[in-house]
Amino acid sequence: MERRAGNASKFRLTLLYAGVVCSAWPLAVTGQSFSDNVETLSGSASVFTGVKHTRTDQGTSTDTNTEPTLGISGQIGGSLESGANSLALLYGGTLETDQEGSGGGLRDNSSITGASRYAYFDPGSRVDFNLGHTVSSVRNDTGFVINPSSYDTRNTLSAGAGLRFYPGELSTLRFFAQAGRSFGEDDLNDQKSYTVGSEFSRRLSERSTGSLNVSRSWSDEDNTDITIDSAQLVYSLQLESGSFSIGGGGSKAEIEYAGGGTTSEYDAMTGFVERAWVTTDWSSAVKYDRSMSDSATDLSLNVPPEFSFLPDTIRLRDLTVSDSLSITHNNQRVCDACDLGVYAAGAILESQLSGATTHEYRAGINLGFQLDALQRLNFGYSWEGDADEDADVIVDEVHRINMGWTRQLAEHTSFGVQLYQSYLRSSLRNNQDQYELRFVLSRGFAMSGQR
Image 1 (tube, rainbow, N blue to C red):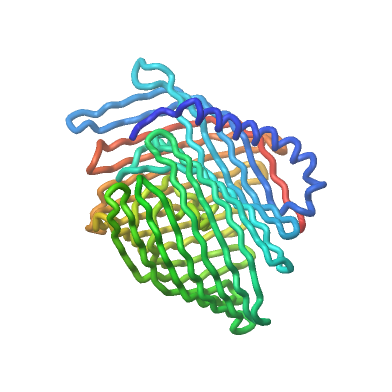
Image 2: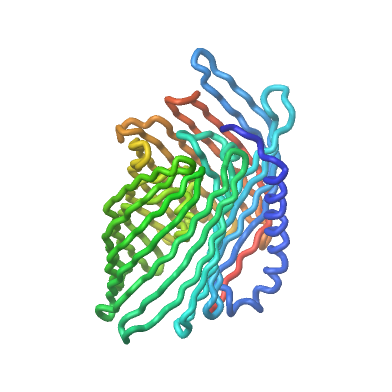
């Protein structure tokens, strides 16, 4: 699945970096005028140079390659709110140039990931609507690659609207429709799906709510039409320290194959349990979820991602029943000058078409330490692993470690040194190690305001 980024990818990345660079200066100047509407907004654009060393295990021999690198990167993120309008976003990308093998020509490696969600919700209005965009690295096959730029890039657009009625003082009935479409590169096929449904909720007490959610989704993928009907009862409780919610129900899917006119039906019990803790300095969440869906159907569900822990890659899948467990923790004040983010997730995926069972695992940690007013240390580690039916036999895994030191040169300018390490271990392909040392010059902005 190795590939080179094309001109289209480089054009999009150029627009991203130009937007980040251009935004840094005017937003820093006009931040005061937007302070009533902006909660948080920050971003940076960087240029870097360094050296990359790659070692590949060929079985009977080891292939090594060392080359200089040059590139640019950028990121922007934040949350904005004005009246009934809200926007949350997080985008980042890198365009890097290095040498292709010993004595080869120059090669451009690009990667970009991110998401944004806009929503309009006014308690005094019956209508609400939302828009979303996600750009992610996806893979069609089992296994990982060591360079994120080797994955295919997929853009996803989603939109939806809802109409609310109030059959009683304590009850709300909402009808909604959602649509999603993806646009893929290279071997990826464009996908689309639609979801309609209703949500009836009733306040049970001052802090608790019960609801009944019913939906139908249609998706079109690889000349196959999939319809999924779902129903679920949900109980939610707001606590002083966070929230608790639980739901249970079922899903039924019907697959119609093009050409032959044959259909197949599948059903599964579904449900979830989630507990979240929130304080002024930290937040944690634990969630178990059992669901039936496929990659195309997910496009219209418009489930906001955990912006703090956007996955490095997303695997495309057919109609699957998944059991997943995830744990996340963010702490802004582990000590007086350090912050911590931790996540762990695992899933058991059973394909309804082939009957194959696979296991997916993810874990990571991000730690930042403020040495003084001008210097900061960062450490990050992430691990992804795949297993087949035997949950404890990892067939493919990748470890990524990054360490960095940053010194502020001016109010919005900094210089840093970063070390990236990646280790690919696989029973399906050659093992590979990669080390990259970067020297980075960054220009950024940060702003916050009152609602």
